[in-house]
Length: 410
Image 1 (tube, one colour):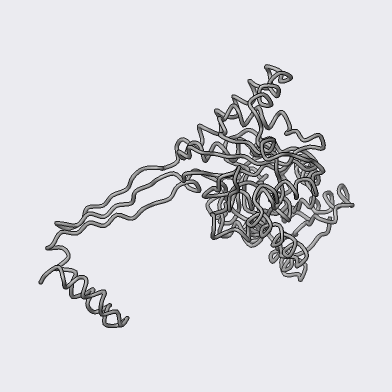
Image 2 (image 1 turned 45 degrees about the horizontal axis):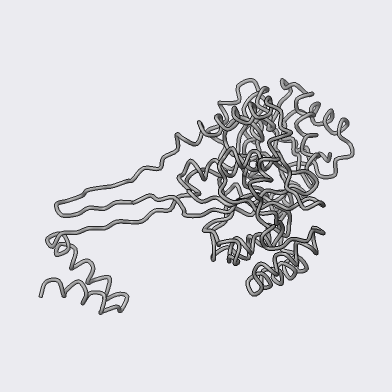
């Protein structure tokens, strides 16, 4: 790990990182795949599945059958099912408290304004299954949608070499009553969800992490469907001082190395801690120690980096949380490692990366809701508003707009 200072050129590059920067080769490849699926439907999806995953399917075999779901349960130990149910309860409890209510405001006589909140109709969830199937992505993505009221949830995930889906993914998806599961991945899966095929109906929103091709595909289909975010490799900033447990810091920074391209950063005012970490993790080219003057500057530095995960390992971490503005999730104190949030605590681990925590939030129920503005005026209320509308129509040169108001009083 390299020791740098906030005023350095290297720190500036770190702040301005963009792990999912467009690469022309990837952009062009994804464009071709999306175009192919839009024009060729199921046939194109199956062609790309054979090319990239080495598996041949018929359109009917793309969808996971009830028999496949049942078979997945056969080898599951009761203790694992019990663990899943406990985790589902934790995540559900967190999201059940989020606001999904109808809002209304009644003003002066004859005016009613409101906001009608409705869940999205159909949502697609992408679950990676490359080097290791990320089974936790199933419940961390599906539960916020389900609790928001989404009735129709479809899951896509790449098949293994034998054409099957990881049984753990199937078990979790079945416990969460996912409506449809398809054995497809990559940009072709994103295109199928966005535009639809004969077998797969299009969705309103696509959520879930993926590799560079999946992320680029989400970027390209955004606007035709909604997406959650453009997520890159995992990130962690640890704010710690000389009072911290060094072994906790080392363990949490090292955990990022289990993810390809994971970024690990220690921010500390302690020179001795900085040296210990650098010596303990010498081979980490994707890691930094940012040496700051004091804890106030540490918070400022973290806000500039805007990491996916932030750990505060100090004696009184809660005193800093009001000043933390930019992070996907904050973990306070020595007994709140990122792994707790990844798997068990409750809030979704689908979080913004590459500095996008400045404007994106972690996945939550509001991501699966849409609002309809409601406006109702009486004749008297509209008459009171008429001169103000007339002035704006004159400025914008839209006379017919005002005529539509004036017509009510002729």
